Length: 265
Image: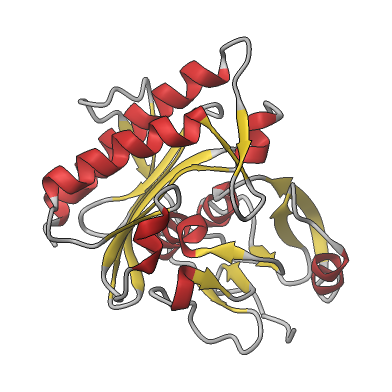
């Protein structure tokens, strides 16, 4: 994969998709439909997906593409592919809470190598550069012109006073039970893949997910976290979370700064 080509393309497509999402988000009303798995989908999901999928297929026609909104792509098999969640945090979008993201990632040999997470309503953009370093971009988010970027890195955790982030829409007792195994200074909630990025920037040390997710929910944030010096492991045995699994479904997992002393499930 040519990362010098891929990274600017992923960035541009995420911004173009984000602009379309915000156009719909700021409209007076939008239709909410229900998919076969009972999850919600809006015109914003579909419009963003069309922009991203067309751009990626034009540039990389020979690379497998998996995207949440195209069910046929979920039948694909392999451990090297592009993977997209055009609007992660649809519930946050529907309730106009802002914590939704555009996610594009490239997975090679089961590992998310490069990714972009764009939160248009929060005006935050995180991505891995061609060399793999994770950065946060600030500025006007012009699709064609890169703004100011700053390298991001996980924090050196204080295991007597950890900062934890957990899901805003899916927090439950099992999550709280696990969090309570640690000495916590502060706990915050966030939606979508932003949680990975908060660990990547050092705004949190630990993000446990005891609930269902799919690979398109996590791959881009996972790539950003890896590029910031963090890691993501399975909840049950602390082995690396890998991609290209059957049906692209994830087990429970923990995203964290390596200085965190992980507790057993």
